[in-house]
Amino acid sequence: MVYISDVSLHFGDRTLLDGISFLLNEKERVGLVGRNGAGKSTLLKIISGQINSDTGGIQAPKGYTIGYLKQDLLFEDNLSVMDEVKKCFVEYNALSNEVDQIGVEIGERTDYESDAYHDLLVRMAEINDRLHIISPGNLDAEVEKILKGLGFKVVDFEKRMREFSGGWQMRVELAKLLLTKPNLLMLDEPTNHLDIESIIWLENYLKTYPGIVVIISHDKRFLNNSCNKIIELELGRANIYNGNYNFYLSEKAANRDILMASYANQQKMLAQKEKTINRFMAKATKTSMAQSMQKQLDKVERIEIPQEDTEVFNIKFPKAPHSGRIVIEAQNVSKSFGDKKVLENLNFTLEKGDKIAFVGKNGMGKTTMSKIIVGQLSPTSGQVNYGANVEISYYAQNQAELLDMSKTALQVMEDSAPPEQRSKVRSILGAFLFSGDDSGKKVSVLSGGERARLAMACMVMKPGNLLILDEPTNHLDILSKEILQNAIKTFDGTLIIVSHDREFLEGLTEKVMEFHENGITEYLGDINYFLSKKNYADVREIDQTNGKASVAVNPVKVLDQNELKQIKRKIQYLERDIEEKEKKINDLNLKMSDAQFYLSPDFAKSSAQLKTLQEEHSTLMVTWENLVETLGE
Image (cartoon, rainbow, N blue to C red; front, side):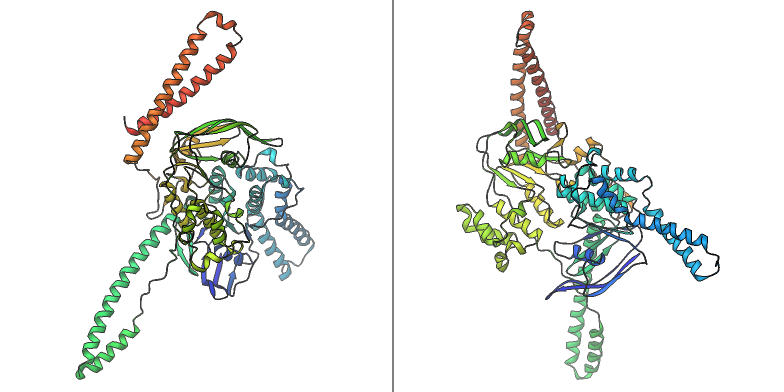
């Protein structure tokens, strides 16, 4: 049990944390939520002892261990992944040695009734309790289980740390934390560097974690599946809700409705009493009664409506310029970096209006393919063909980091603005919450969330009909993510989105393209359809308003006239393509029906071509059948 008591922190005139107090009970799974800049990461750093608060402190039992997933990592580049992870067993090794020493000392002593002997027995019991929790058992097997769960392959275990990106190094640090099993485990945005499969694994792992877990995350589904308590930081205060994220949302709304009703009733009562007092004051015979009533009224505790942090940015993608029916066509695209093959012989076509999610384990080439499409990388072999009038609008995974740190927000926008948008720069900045003096702030002093908003503002100024978003939700809080999600839903062009956030992807796309070691696989449905087809053990969300588990049922989507029109147009295109494929197949069959053709040198090439045409025809038929079924025809 850990008690956070009256913690306050100020930065100049700004109060970040204002006398925050709460209790963390054993085996609680706590989601720490709030807007960017609310003080969530700062509070975890105070609890872990990295920074000091102005007032208050942390109370925990003696010997209590706290683990914090740091953002600044220091590794020995030449160590293997396995050796780096095994460094985490320092506590286990030290306690094991101490137990051995105490065992020897107890065996040598004869003062069984002394306080010193009793203290040794107590210490031995304390250590054994802790060792029971953190014991890795079969050490190599336990390390392998954790590393595999976080996405590493066995062949990665002996690779040097320097061979991995920052995201994969963060996974190594997370593995070390999970293996050491601190009494209080604190994870700051643990899903940022994980793919969907690893996120689901972590959700299931945390369910049986032996200690307290505190999580900062902007992934709603992860919070719902992992947490049984939510602590919201808002305007310096801590508000506590005993349930998951959905429970917190409903309870917060209900509490505010009750508060607003109580406030309205009290205001009505106060107005009536003040009217009575004023009337009595005008009569000499009732002055004393009026004064008595006024004293009673002064003692009434006034209901106050607390402020809410509801400031949000406004994003709206411009109308997509017209493009041809075929937007892009990837033909046998391969990409290698030295000896490492990332993509091999990828073939796919995007048509106008397609909404596609790129998913898959990290390192499978989602971002690489995105960069090839936008022209930032060249394929090692193969090519990407573009349709008529295709204009690409691209948000890179590290877009916010690419901004010029020496310039102000206004200067960055002016540099990015096409001539026709220059007059709108300040209004667009204002819509993204950079109004007044904020537009003059240098990029170097902006927070991660502010830089992400500025990068999006730059993107919005350049209209495109192919929108490619690579991890656009990094650094955005939950409310900002919902605003971006709604904006994407109204975009009328073609969309490719790379994301591991299941809640964010829900309803955004009609097709999922999974990148894996053997290439790509297409799924004709949204992210939930993909998860069901993959049989991922996605944890059921708990409806904690009534304490019963429930499975969300997706309502039947009612198509509007624009969507019906798009689907009918796609069906027409497909029927034309199917006819063309069937004609080519028939022509080849006729050509190959000649007995002498089997002796021709073109036989092998024609056989392979026929097989490809038949596979393409089969894929087109499946797509056509699904679309016809959607229309109910």
